Image (cartoon, rainbow, N blue to C red; front, side, top):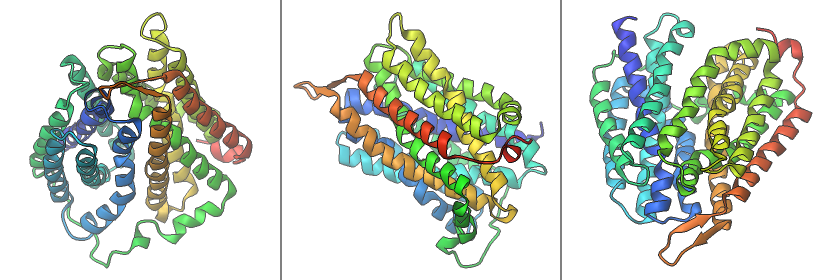
Amino acid sequence: MSLVKVRLAAMMFLEYFIWGAWYVTVGTWLGRTRHFTGSEIALVGGTTAVAAIVSPFIVGWLADRFFATQHVIAVLHLAGAVLLWVASSQTTFGAIYWLILAYACLYMPTLALTNSLAFRQMKDPKLEFGPIRVLGTAGWIVAGLIISHLNWEVTAFPLKLAAVCSAVFAAYALTLPHTPPLKRDEFKAASVIPPEAVQLLKDKSFFIFVLASFLICIPLQFYYVFTNLFLTEIGVSNTAGKMAMGQGSELLCMLFIAWFFRRLGVKYMLIAGMSAWALRYVLFAFGNAGAGVWMLYLGILLHGICYDFFFVTGQIYVDRKAPLAYRAAAQGMITLITYGAGMFVGSFLSGWVVDHFATVAADGSATHAWQPIWLVSGGLSAAVLILFWIAFKERDEMTASS
């Protein structure tokens, strides 16, 4: 591996280490230590969804037209480090929410910017990007293992760790290969999602795919925001490290996704992914920290199928359906609909459901009836699965061909 590729791999490691360091356990800190309600925890977790809606405009306005990509990454991470550090010392919902929302709006654009910078430095991204991007998943796993080893799940230290690493990344970004802006024309909202990408929604199968993608991201937020709190509350130890098993299974499934894709096609790959979400929530509903702990572990290990079979397969499907000139815009539209709108709605719904099944003590601490919470999210996933199974009619020869 060349020195440039090593530097890009280190960039990916830091980028996702930062996200994994604070996001996995923030709900546990807010619930167990700050005694926030489920709705408040979900809103903080949903800040990344709001940022996912805003970030394409930041990327399109700044990095594409005015400043070198590595400079934008450095400034965003440095400002984000300050916000995250300040947020870690706050005690009220309002202060924490607005600080983390501001931080998320700075961090989320860097996901696209690091990808863009990496692509610009490659001769053949299709072959070169995968081994580099996998270091991002490794960064997320390492962050979880460190936090578990230090028993930081219920503290603000994960936010401080992420803040320090964000400042380090800001300095490191300045050493990355120079990646100047490509465009100087006037920025317009339509340049983020051009009408040609929206026109894809006129295709019935593509519309059903987009609708199902939006709907499945609503129960998805139950997992992302509340799993660590759930595991901690029922007595599982070293939760962040054990949740990192999910990223390990993601790496394993990624190795075989092309093989499954050729044999199953888009429809049944997506069905498998949605089925895994529903099954995961059932396992969580009936698992426990004792004899049923295997159900919790299996639910976590299903993350590879949940994520790769649905999201990665969806990206492949969009790439095939969209015209060559608008593939990036089509992927951006799907990101807005799923990670943005879907998870934004999911943050409100998951918070309401968790609060509905909560018992609050006199000191403000809460315990939850987790079984009905997971059954609700599992039922929502199953409903989306049935809708997609019935309504999606893409031709087999298009989806199953490699």
